[in-house]
Length: 193
Image 1 (cartoon, rainbow, N blue to C red):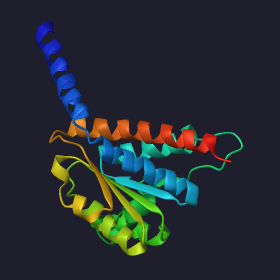
Image 2 (image 1 turned 90 degrees about the vertical axis):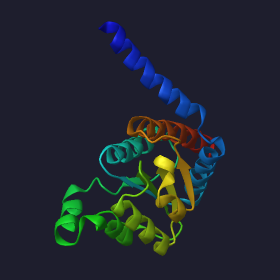
Image 3 (image 1 turned 135 degrees about the vertical axis):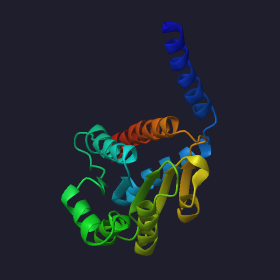
Image 4 (image 1 turned 60 degrees about the vertical axis):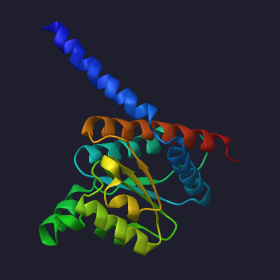
Protein backbone atom coordinates (compact mmCIF):
# COMPACT_ATOMS: atom_id res chain seq x y z
CA UNK A 1 0.00 0.00 0.00
CA UNK A 2 2.78 2.49 0.86
CA UNK A 3 4.37 1.71 -2.54
CA UNK A 4 1.20 2.92 -4.28
CA UNK A 5 1.23 6.13 -2.24
CA UNK A 6 4.88 6.69 -3.03
CA UNK A 7 4.17 6.17 -6.72
CA UNK A 8 1.26 8.62 -6.51
CA UNK A 9 3.53 11.28 -5.01
CA UNK A 10 6.31 10.56 -7.49
CA UNK A 11 3.85 10.78 -10.39
CA UNK A 12 2.69 14.25 -9.34
CA UNK A 13 6.25 15.50 -8.97
CA UNK A 14 7.11 14.08 -12.39
CA UNK A 15 4.17 15.93 -13.98
CA UNK A 16 5.16 19.13 -12.21
CA UNK A 17 8.76 18.72 -13.36
CA UNK A 18 7.56 18.34 -16.97
CA UNK A 19 5.63 21.59 -16.61
CA UNK A 20 8.64 23.38 -15.11
CA UNK A 21 10.92 22.10 -17.86
CA UNK A 22 8.55 23.34 -20.58
CA UNK A 23 7.88 26.86 -19.27
CA UNK A 24 8.62 29.56 -21.83
CA UNK A 25 11.43 31.53 -20.14
CA UNK A 26 10.94 34.48 -22.51
CA UNK A 27 7.32 34.82 -21.33
CA UNK A 28 8.44 34.92 -17.70
CA UNK A 29 11.25 37.36 -18.50
CA UNK A 30 8.70 39.71 -20.07
CA UNK A 31 6.70 39.66 -16.82
CA UNK A 32 9.86 40.70 -14.95
CA UNK A 33 10.26 43.61 -17.39
CA UNK A 34 6.64 44.69 -16.91
CA UNK A 35 6.98 44.67 -13.12
CA UNK A 36 10.33 46.49 -13.21
CA UNK A 37 8.79 49.14 -15.45
CA UNK A 38 5.77 49.44 -13.14
CA UNK A 39 8.05 50.07 -10.17
CA UNK A 40 10.15 52.64 -12.03
CA UNK A 41 7.00 54.50 -13.15
CA UNK A 42 5.41 54.19 -9.68
CA UNK A 43 2.42 52.40 -11.22
CA UNK A 44 0.07 50.25 -9.17
CA UNK A 45 -0.45 46.55 -9.88
CA UNK A 46 -3.87 44.96 -9.38
CA UNK A 47 -4.33 41.20 -9.39
CA UNK A 48 -7.35 38.90 -9.40
CA UNK A 49 -8.42 35.27 -9.72
CA UNK A 50 -11.12 32.83 -8.61
CA UNK A 51 -10.92 30.08 -6.00
CA UNK A 52 -7.35 28.83 -5.72
CA UNK A 53 -6.30 31.64 -8.05
CA UNK A 54 -7.83 34.14 -5.63
CA UNK A 55 -5.66 32.67 -2.89
CA UNK A 56 -2.69 32.94 -5.26
CA UNK A 57 -3.52 36.59 -6.00
CA UNK A 58 -3.67 37.37 -2.27
CA UNK A 59 -0.37 35.54 -1.75
CA UNK A 60 1.24 37.66 -4.49
CA UNK A 61 0.08 40.81 -2.66
CA UNK A 62 1.51 39.55 0.63
CA UNK A 63 4.87 38.77 -0.94
CA UNK A 64 5.06 42.12 -2.72
CA UNK A 65 3.69 44.24 0.13
CA UNK A 66 5.91 42.74 2.79
CA UNK A 67 8.55 40.62 1.10
CA UNK A 68 9.83 43.10 -1.47
CA UNK A 69 10.26 46.03 0.93
CA UNK A 70 13.69 47.51 1.50
CA UNK A 71 14.44 49.93 4.31
CA UNK A 72 14.42 53.54 3.10
CA UNK A 73 13.17 52.67 -0.42
CA UNK A 74 9.87 53.45 -2.12
CA UNK A 75 7.49 50.52 -1.77
CA UNK A 76 5.80 48.54 -4.53
CA UNK A 77 2.01 48.97 -4.62
CA UNK A 78 -0.11 45.90 -5.35
CA UNK A 79 -3.73 45.12 -4.50
CA UNK A 80 -5.83 41.96 -4.89
CA UNK A 81 -9.20 42.93 -6.34
CA UNK A 82 -10.97 40.06 -4.53
CA UNK A 83 -9.77 40.89 -1.03
CA UNK A 84 -12.55 43.39 -0.31
CA UNK A 85 -15.19 40.73 0.35
CA UNK A 86 -18.05 43.15 1.14
CA UNK A 87 -17.51 44.94 -2.19
CA UNK A 88 -17.16 41.63 -4.04
CA UNK A 89 -20.40 40.25 -2.61
CA UNK A 90 -22.25 43.53 -3.23
CA UNK A 91 -21.36 43.42 -6.94
CA UNK A 92 -22.10 39.69 -7.11
CA UNK A 93 -25.51 40.18 -5.49
CA UNK A 94 -26.60 43.53 -6.92
CA UNK A 95 -25.05 43.44 -10.42
CA UNK A 96 -23.70 40.04 -11.47
CA UNK A 97 -20.87 37.73 -10.44
CA UNK A 98 -19.21 38.39 -13.79
CA UNK A 99 -18.63 41.99 -12.66
CA UNK A 100 -16.92 41.34 -9.30
CA UNK A 101 -13.49 42.29 -10.68
CA UNK A 102 -14.40 44.56 -13.62
CA UNK A 103 -16.26 47.06 -11.42
CA UNK A 104 -13.31 47.57 -9.03
CA UNK A 105 -11.04 47.85 -12.11
CA UNK A 106 -13.28 50.69 -13.34
CA UNK A 107 -13.03 52.34 -9.92
CA UNK A 108 -9.33 52.01 -9.16
CA UNK A 109 -7.22 51.30 -12.24
CA UNK A 110 -5.59 54.21 -14.02
CA UNK A 111 -3.85 54.43 -17.34
CA UNK A 112 -0.43 52.78 -17.14
CA UNK A 113 -1.27 50.60 -14.13
CA UNK A 114 -0.83 46.83 -14.47
CA UNK A 115 -3.64 44.29 -14.08
CA UNK A 116 -2.65 40.65 -13.57
CA UNK A 117 -5.41 38.17 -14.36
CA UNK A 118 -5.06 34.61 -13.07
CA UNK A 119 -7.17 31.78 -14.44
CA UNK A 120 -6.20 28.17 -15.04
CA UNK A 121 -8.72 27.75 -17.86
CA UNK A 122 -8.34 31.17 -19.42
CA UNK A 123 -12.12 31.33 -19.75
CA UNK A 124 -13.51 32.57 -16.41
CA UNK A 125 -16.21 35.13 -17.33
CA UNK A 126 -15.38 37.53 -14.48
CA UNK A 127 -11.69 37.47 -15.41
CA UNK A 128 -12.53 38.13 -19.07
CA UNK A 129 -14.70 41.10 -18.06
CA UNK A 130 -11.89 42.42 -15.85
CA UNK A 131 -9.49 42.14 -18.81
CA UNK A 132 -11.87 44.17 -20.96
CA UNK A 133 -12.28 46.83 -18.26
CA UNK A 134 -8.51 47.00 -17.74
CA UNK A 135 -7.88 47.51 -21.46
CA UNK A 136 -10.53 50.25 -21.53
CA UNK A 137 -8.78 51.95 -18.58
CA UNK A 138 -5.46 51.91 -20.45
CA UNK A 139 -3.81 49.40 -18.16
CA UNK A 140 -1.14 46.90 -19.13
CA UNK A 141 -2.67 43.43 -18.84
CA UNK A 142 -0.84 40.26 -17.89
CA UNK A 143 -2.47 36.83 -17.97
CA UNK A 144 -1.30 33.89 -15.89
CA UNK A 145 -3.08 31.02 -17.58
CA UNK A 146 -3.03 27.27 -18.14
CA UNK A 147 -5.04 24.91 -20.34
CA UNK A 148 -3.72 26.35 -23.61
CA UNK A 149 -4.54 29.98 -22.83
CA UNK A 150 -8.29 30.04 -23.41
CA UNK A 151 -9.96 33.30 -24.46
CA UNK A 152 -7.89 35.39 -22.05
CA UNK A 153 -4.62 34.94 -23.89
CA UNK A 154 -5.84 37.01 -26.86
CA UNK A 155 -7.21 39.69 -24.51
CA UNK A 156 -3.96 40.48 -22.69
CA UNK A 157 -0.85 42.43 -23.59
CA UNK A 158 1.26 39.56 -22.34
CA UNK A 159 0.60 36.08 -20.96
CA UNK A 160 2.44 33.22 -19.36
CA UNK A 161 0.64 30.06 -20.43
CA UNK A 162 1.44 27.07 -18.24
CA UNK A 163 1.70 24.00 -20.51
CA UNK A 164 -0.70 21.79 -18.54
CA UNK A 165 -4.39 20.94 -18.45
CA UNK A 166 -4.22 19.93 -14.78
CA UNK A 167 -5.18 22.47 -12.12
CA UNK A 168 -2.54 21.49 -9.54
CA UNK A 169 0.58 22.04 -11.66
CA UNK A 170 -0.92 25.18 -13.24
CA UNK A 171 -1.62 26.70 -9.82
CA UNK A 172 1.77 25.53 -8.51
CA UNK A 173 3.53 27.36 -11.32
CA UNK A 174 1.51 30.54 -10.72
CA UNK A 175 2.86 30.51 -7.15
CA UNK A 176 6.39 29.84 -8.37
CA UNK A 177 6.03 32.86 -10.66
CA UNK A 178 5.06 34.93 -7.61
CA UNK A 179 8.31 33.98 -5.91
CA UNK A 180 10.39 34.64 -9.02
CA UNK A 181 8.82 38.03 -9.72
CA UNK A 182 8.64 39.28 -6.12
CA UNK A 183 12.26 38.29 -5.46
CA UNK A 184 13.34 40.04 -8.67
CA UNK A 185 11.40 43.19 -7.74
CA UNK A 186 13.00 43.19 -4.30
CA UNK A 187 16.42 43.25 -5.98
CA UNK A 188 15.29 46.12 -8.25
CA UNK A 189 14.06 48.07 -5.21
CA UNK A 190 17.26 47.38 -3.24
CA UNK A 191 19.38 48.67 -6.14
CA UNK A 192 17.24 51.77 -6.75
CA UNK A 193 18.41 55.26 -5.83
